[in-house]
Image (cartoon, rainbow, N blue to C red; front, side):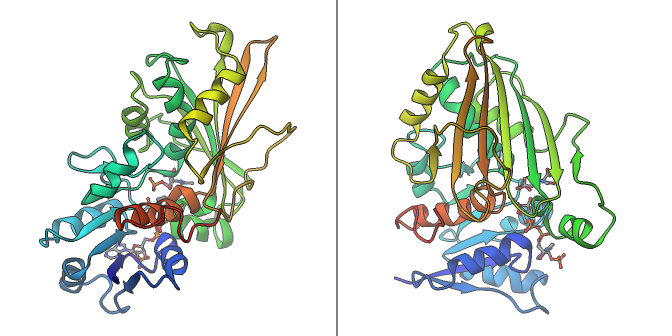
Length: 309
Ligand SMILES: NC(=O)C1=CN([C@@H]2O[C@H](COP(=O)(O)OP(=O)(O)OC[C@H]3O[C@@H](n4cnc5c(N)ncnc54)[C@H](OP(=O)(O)O)[C@@H]3O)[C@@H](O)[C@H]2O)C=CC1
Ligand SMILES: CC(=O)N[C@@H](CCC(=O)OP(=O)(O)O)C(=O)O
């Protein structure tokens, strides 16, 4: 069976890569609009209602508008924007989040792709909260760096041709980044983490880090216990990997160009401290890889079909 797939926002950073990734997949016929029509409300409404699947690669307001234009009850949506990540009636599209999440995605009509930073944060902490190694009201923090393609076309232009001459820019200094609600909700924690993101002068890649004072946690977990909780949580995943090689440094590009998500824990038992580190590609598992994975799951196909692992 060939499914009609409309990519709304197909000329943007995420949209272009989704089309590239799905080219050659004969399960889907990709529909896009001409340059003249791609922002035309009526043309978009027609394409949205004619499709079996829609992937929204749009700014938040345009994504909300697209959803409001859908009247066909059989059109199923994957939204790559941050408009619906904690919204009623939407399923959170991080298949590895809970044991039953993949099944929920398979049955859903509305799936919200996770944010790129929450993908790393949630993969690191959710198994530890679920198993009680970290209490749900622990004051977590998360330090992270992203390649500049994470900011879409305008940030790419700023870093490649424009005013951004820096190597490393800390931002979200108001402690109110748009990813905080989904981090808190889906980690099931009492408080939002202190989130310290930075954008750096590399095209793609992310390094997301949660520091943990093991000595201060009520159960004083070892690095081995943390790794064991991850291995148990991700035992069936080909996409989330738990790595345990001895490393002295990790580059932000470690998983760039792939759809993998790699988790590592580094600890000093004497100091009672650990650093939990996730690496991924903001445009891989952070966006396009996740959208393709969710599409595969919703269409009843191999979840990893077409992914770069
Ligand atoms: N870049 C990344 O790493 C990630 C991005 N995302 C999310 O994915 C979504 C897309 O991001 P990204 O691809 O980076 O953004 P881009 O800015 O690169 O692309 C957005 C696209 O949407 C088009 N567009 C804007 N308004 C409308 C409209 N009303 N109707 C139709 N098309 C419209 C834009 O056209 P034009 O340029 O002509 O205005 C552009 O082609 C965003 O919500 C973003 O938050 C999620 C995870 C990671
Ligand atoms: C470097 C950079 O600016 N990153 C973006 C997040 C990009 C992303 O992937 O998140 P969404 O899917 O929520 O847009 C930011 O911090 O707002």
